[in-house]
View (cartoon, rainbow, N blue to C red):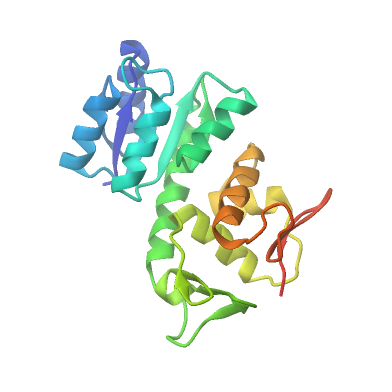
Length: 228
């Protein structure tokens, strides 16, 4: 049974969402503050963390940053704020996905299952030991869950790695944001800003000049490709 940590200060939402997730087959541990959430995650090691942004004391952004320093657990923001700035800031802090309140529990549960499924897949070997996808000085090693640039290991999150692998599996082929949402996040429909922010974060790690990328290229009006 998958365990979810819910960090939500609204008592009514926290209780109702925890109960709804348990009805979906999850074990839910719910707390009201970021500080409690950080302690709870160190203690219980939930499979997924849900975080509200507007929390008393430490806010959700800092909570995400601190979680991400210690753990590669999938993090989903659940917030009433849907302004682009808030979405981008949360994803740049280290969140993997973003859900706007009011929450549709069936949709949220489906996203959580997709995140966990892809996290397990990323952690498993996917090819022979010699399998290396090479793009100039960039190497993607699916079987080792590694990315290397000029031989040096690049630290990427699970979601960034899945995104890079999906593009590397289709060298030179343009994949639309919607295709990437479906293949990497498991969304039939979703917020394309999630893709854009993760692409931007990857570029900061693998491109010498993010304004003129050589590897991860934007094809205006169509999507992204990894340049062979």
